[in-house]
Image (cartoon, rainbow, N blue to C red):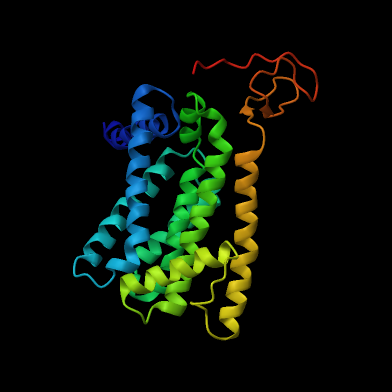
Length: 265
């Protein structure tokens, strides 16, 4: 009897783990709704991260900050329960990033200088397969590469803006300082260089150089995605080549007959 009583909690935990695996990794209607709901929550959290420099001095900021920490902690715990290999999960970049973000949320006074890295969660969100699977099922499937490139450049802009605001413009009032940092980031990335706002000292010059080099690379990548001929993502069953023209009949790498689904306009 004691053994049966002890096994009941273990059985409930295993049921919970199985249910979470179905919700996080399944493709049933309930799982898709759950994953879309978590994506919406993640977008709201990212919006809070973007707005953090503007509301940091508000009385309610810490309440919102700790509430987001609770949500993120619950999500991390759920993902660990749903995982079949927790050590491997803990080595994934997205999980390491979430743990770091959680630390900045729990200790905002001590780690506030690293808060700008929270925006990297937007990149982490873009790595989830559900978003792109839903896009591929629509007429806009050819925009997947453009969307990925756009997310990368937006993430870069906000991360750099947060960094510059934290280390160069924090002495300026919240909204004005953040706008100055964002303005400098955009003019530097686009190599416009009006020169009305500059970063002081050697550190400022080195920061500007790094922003220009990385930023222009991301812009070139985005331009390539926009202007190159449209292709669709459809793995070749024989050689696994991913990208093909929408009307391709044979794989250009191995000649295998393709059966690319035709989505109506």
